[in-house]
Image (cartoon, rainbow, N blue to C red; front, side, top):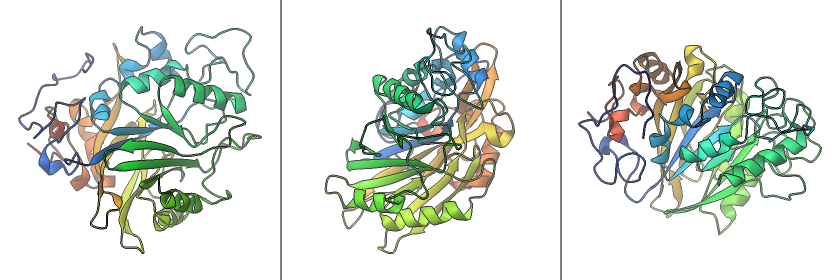
Length: 393
């Protein structure tokens, strides 16, 4: 359920209700015009960057519920998917100092220097349980901040996520041979998720714990080809951490890797790192498959306050089998989100259609992703304050 927020209107059921299945938080079809949650499909949801700026950590530290209220308004929309994936752009390394040394005594949440924001992120491990409670299933951990707390920080982060029941991809514990990917079982088959990062900000990675998108051996397209050739895997999705921060336009390197991954067999490529939305493109592979690339989903939760950085999207896609029996990712739809800060709940991420000041974020998402791709809370059976982009009314 939604927590109480200082919003201009209450969240109520809209006239457009799901055609089958329970209300958000369960599974089943939503409004038929929405183009996702088809009967028999496996619906995946992806978010942008889950950040741990110090303001987010301080807000969590002063609440008994910790990080959970920050995610609560979006949780019903995350839980609705069969599989929900986030880019976790912070270590969750219990009691690890900058540089990767262990503190001499346990630290409280938001207590620096153990738990701090930019430039050397580290958040309390309770963030993992909050993500799991909000409906997240998989955390992408390959990003430029993965080594902010050194090799031990990577180990502790993966331990925290595993304890919360989350799967991970893109980083490994020291002494682990792999695999880099994780696999989720769905009603249409076994789907592999593979994350990589362009960089770890130049920090030492002596144990090779973070998979690189570029210059790695074997190359990412080769790893994708190996995954899709595995008889135990039905499809693969690439999650690259790439591109230029704050640019709304993907660069040539992103485009080359996206094309190569799709040619190698990826059903979709869903990127992160720019902290702003970048376009979605559909590409046709030489084998006749149509796949899509979402270059960046922006920030999911952060304390960056310009319009383009507080606007993100939850991206939904249905995985189904095509006429040849292959598992493919259908054209995606996006639910715009907006980050605000409230007196009671602190920094909070909410579908933009549910907040009084959400219209600019909806317009921002429409300008980058295309209005025709947008979902609205009314598609999920919730009344929206902003009907723009609604597929069902």
